[in-house]
Length: 146
Length: 383
Image (cartoon, rainbow over all chains, first blue to last red):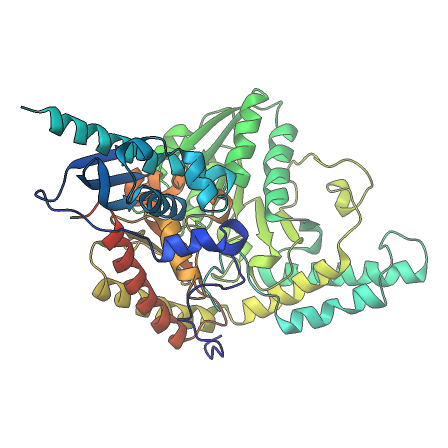
């Protein structure tokens, strides 16, 4: 097996293993997650932290809001490929949305946008939605703060 | 593809496949049939039985064939506890056994048997003192694995055999992960029942064996025909059994040279990972392990994500044991060794095999370094 004729560093699209479990969109969001990173304290208008590190998934999400619109969003996630891909897709869906639109994003929207996710990974998609709700709650709290 | 999951399964050796073919194409008869065509199959099964018995050091009539390591474990446990029910109903096993043993013990608890699950040390070795304390007058069966499938840690089975026998209990060893990796001479192991599986030693899937030392009480679990000394009904998997014997012979012939080669490669892998990646732990590193297995826990990332990242580069490794993939609970073996759920979650098992070469190890170390770094950049548990 040492002489690989095919390049072992060739990344996506391999017709093996994971494709049976995750579709190509999910794999893409896992391999190239959108909006990974953090916002600085000065840039942040809302911050959400969800998950129980002891049992697995964990996510941090930052939003910057201007005229009630999310113009920047960033996240970091600890978890399985499903958690990373759904976190990434959630930020892609929420970016450039108004706060009211973002509030309406559901876990089903995230799964649909990914073209489906294995049944036992469905719960992962709640992580991003909860983190976004927490960040929006935080934004509202900060606004009303005297 | 770089396949580094030999504890899950191994490829069928070409020589093994070769000897199996005639039993699909020409001598495909039923070994129990009363004519010469059936006798050809019967003779092949009995010859295979003798060859394996010679390898492991027992009499041919102390070996019966069945379909899987799981079935063999089931027959050993269920068969022995039922045959010995008049003497007691207590079983002793360990918390790190394969699910084939653990879930069988749990099922037996539901049938009224009592089971003690002995803990392990932080290195993943069965705590012998605690095992001694758990043995009772009504203990009929003790079942301990020879090598753990996730960590490769070798268990003190010789010592446990003597302790179990002193208390009059039957001793079963699940040797699925050690056969072909360590010398498994039955005289040395001292067990009454020993489970072997063909596909972990470059034989076919669907074939396994249970060694039953003469005089060991055992009731049948599968009912039907009188095959396999009346202990395992069902037409023999002739081609599989023939292939199993060939695989066992080959594995035992090269056990020492291949063991040294794999140990060298594993050392290379572990040294490479330790120098390239921070905050990584090798589980069971301080105690004897089978030479091909490495259990690596990376802080701040998830093992399934790491395995998928490696898979996308054509490298196959597993997270914990193959059977628990898909379950969300972290490995029971790693938790029993005292790892936090989060560290257990960040673990992959790398198990090398005959086709693994040095270049594969180098590629894997580089890939591990890069994928771990990428996942740590994404991880909310860092920085």
